[in-house]
Length: 281
Length: 294
Image (cartoon, rainbow over all chains, first blue to last red; front, top):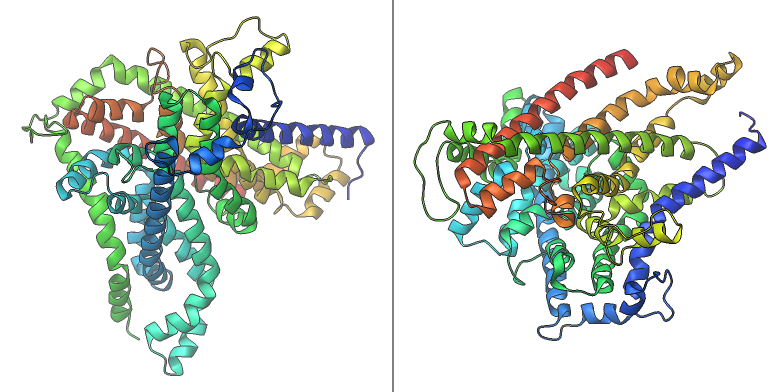
């Protein structure tokens, strides 16, 4: 191990503090805004710390009194959970058989490459026909319609992750089970899938985060509380529907909470997934 | 088991995925191509075949050229900054110091923050009347008056780039850190014995290990940055005076604000073609980097 001079050590700690400050300052400020009284946020010079902590906005946003900001927020929260949940479930259901097939039969791998290449497509290249198609089916402003559209993003990605997951499970285990008389689906269900569970979980987490984060399609294809997602709701709030910045910040904190918690709790799995190819923009 | 049966079985297992992909990607893409040769409106008229006139109109318009420059500028500057800050952060985190684990966990935060929340957060920070940036700079005596960071063409794009970098440099840092941890300790030790200075060590010992993973990060981030929509829509909607309008915003305006589905489709395909060319060029570069690093 290389010995460090005290000066270099001090330099390392200074850089570490700087990096921590750069990362934390905006996030901490978002939280402080959410608990500061409106007067403190509008004060000049700005009050960096509220005289009295005010959690009322959290109560306001999570209440479901009719025609309140809370009603719209809670509806969008529910829509986001439903849409991300449905899209993730569907993506995983498609990805498991397809990922296994490509992993065990490389000769069909080119079809997966084609599916993955669609990652390069900007969503605007699909948006107009998808809009017309959903309108035709009466599925605009509909949670099922949006979940279906989200498969354009989620399915290629989960299939690719599942394929790499199955690659690391030796096929000899499967052949052994088959020699013992198990059928293909029995083998997959009893042997392969339990071994692949960690990959299924990681793929599902990533898929959920991607769907939770999506904005463009949600902006185009939803219009009111029946299907509007959290991202669109927050953009609406920030776009001038409310004048209390603290309320916008509170909505931001609440929307960020699930992915941030998932991110921190599953660091190890996420980082290995990210660094094996990089995922999210 | 025979090879034919294996292949058939594989196709059968892939069938659900392929059917869905054709429905939600294949068919819409085909239809975008068809629409791009018509003067269809988003709602109502089916539109007539107009040949390549949409393409000519879009490519020759001054909007397109200006937007292409804005998009390129945004992509190049933000990705370059993310790569540099990301690698520096990774080099720091590869050192041993107390609190390193916590700092590495903190990197997850900006990455996990939803893009729209990030955009909203920075919009509040840049607020011309009550924003934290104005307050901090004034209290430090760096600026005299509050400024409208997102409201002036001169500062709007730079302000967006800062917000985008803050969210995305952690991804680069995590990828670079994973690559750094794969550098064998005895190689760095040997280079030290051989008397290599820190810069020579970085250039000749560490960089070869970083090059491959960094290229992948560069490709993904550049494609993402070229397609950028969310952060710009939430923070400036392409304004002021169209100074932050990127290609995706322009397509959105053409196809959805002005409801011109035909010309919007042609513009979307031009963007798709640009992204594809970019990706192909990069793919060639990745292969070259991978070859020289091996």
